[in-house]
Amino acid sequence: MKKIMMMVVAAFMATVNANAQFEAGTFSIQPLVGCGAATITNADNINIAGKDLKNQFTVSAMTGVEAEYQISKAFSVAAGLNYTLQGTGWENYTQGSTKYNDPRMELGYVKIPLVVNCYVAKGLALKAGVQFGFMTDAHSKVQNEDKLEGRKVTIDYSIDYKDDFEKFDLSIPVGISYQFSNPFVIDARYQVGVTKLNKESGHGVKDLKNGVFLITFGYKFAL
Image 1 (cartoon, rainbow, N blue to C red):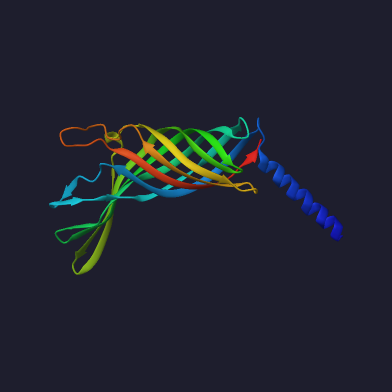
Image 2: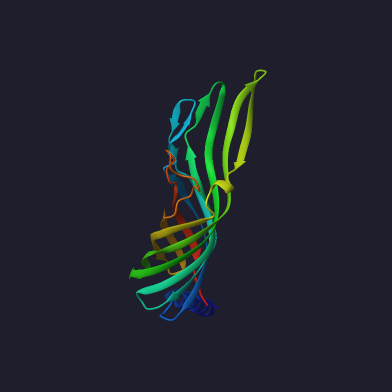
């Protein structure tokens, strides 16, 4: 019985290792999820109640899938489809007796990344490419805190800004990934916004661009 169990374990490990090698000419697919931080460049010129609010990073999240073709031992190309929640935040502020907490802009995108991977060591890849984004929604959100008849009252506000922003966003993803022998993959990328976000600019209004940092976790298997 012990020998049979050892044979089963050995066969399982051999299967996992074989699936993790991904030889040249192999197609693979990778479902993935991730989170990180996002901001919008030049979004720090908002003046409220005589105070210039500084923008800051806000939480970003992503889920999707990526397909990869291994051209050679050192190079591969990948294409993906994902949904990303990003945007920017601002510092809390007070106006009169009202406190404004967690003001932020939330943007949703469906994205198609096209990436070239350069494997500099076993499982370790440097990557860069181009990414096409299509906006699905855009909302500014804030929580108002005030006192009414001696009681604290909080109200969540959300305003739709989708019509004020460009629907298409082009960015350059650059990053690094490591594939374990399982084969789980951890990937870190920064998406540099190329096209401007706002439709109207000039006359003191700067071009706004997206910036997103994401760490994703995926499971890659051969087709």
